[in-house]
Length: 61
Image (cartoon, rainbow, N blue to C red; front, top):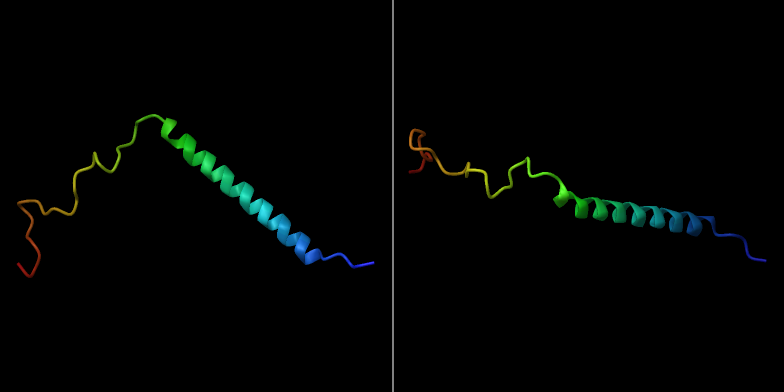
């Protein structure tokens, strides 16, 4: 009779855990758009890269 391969069994359990965790994260991310619109999206925020008129420009300019 062959001996049990405990390492293989452990690896399979770890893979199952990992897959279940990823599925939970995907489901959580899928539910996320249903949250209230309290926070601003990236499109609504002003551009922080543009220099304001009262601020000096880059040193090379």
